[in-house]
Image 1 (spheres, one colour):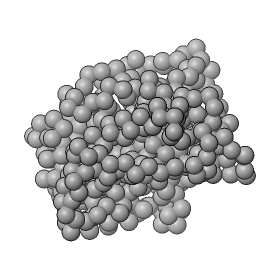
Image 2 (cartoon, rainbow, N blue to C red):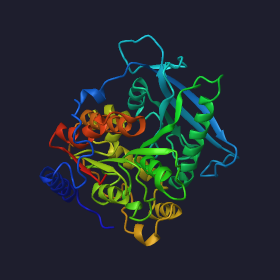
Image 3 (cartoon, rainbow, N blue to C red):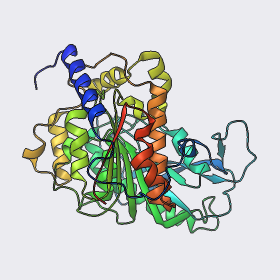
Image 4 (cartoon, rainbow, N blue to C red):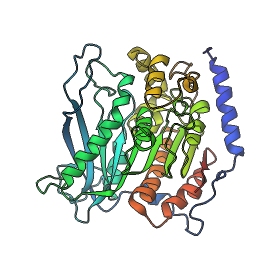
Length: 402
């Protein structure tokens, strides 16, 4: 891969933005809820009627080991810390999204479950505000802390452990369902087993898609997936199961980790069911996680910080990514040309305002999860089709057939 000068990268971003402004906002898929009025954006930005309960679970899958890596000798099991937000009964405070540790679960369950998958070298708290908001609106959200791709993984994070993570997700779903059935557990009666969805960012978005749609990994309990900044180049056409499972994809044109030109549309085209691609002109990679908002407001583009950390980590190589993709069923030749993350110069020109980017992520994800996991009156789908793109000329939406 030849190096691309910063000026050339800026020109590519400008060309992409111009193309987006000229494109139709509906794409070829049509409107799935044409008779439903588009609700105002505030509907999907507000907290719900509940408090946000919070607890942490120390789960361990004794049937699978954690392999050795670096200075880490490994474990005989998979130790999966899981962060859980849930609808709770508690007195409201000035901050409706404040976490209430071990609060009593609200009546009215069972609730839909969303399992959240964090990105590489990140943590389950990367979108904690989104998780808390969903909890106040009647969701149980469980953020998985993967054993060997997290911010504090023993021996350092290793990208190749990604192949073990769909099984981690399935295990967490099993354990949460068991907790919901246990009268002695804080989560008793909270989870509706017929309403389960997945969400994630970056490599976590890839894991979410893999758990729902890769034939070798597919959990048929999952009814929808929302994923941001997914490495779509590693999901060539034909590798995903041809099922009608709704998928929401978000990607920024100024993503300097998972490059927009070769990944965003590839992910969209790999999915065969109802799908949405929300493109954020000037959006960055780190801007998909609320955790980065404060840093972004000071640094302008923390993709530079992310890439410095990723290069120092040293496990994200072409060979490692090829092995990962082929383990999930991709043809090695079909992923050979995929650009390795963070191997091109980072564009340091200002992109989309970080607070606005996080706002768009929350808008789209909340509307999508309420429409296709919780099940609403069609308002969420109408907002995805017509309301998201109405947020500004720097936001476009492409849809697939329904």
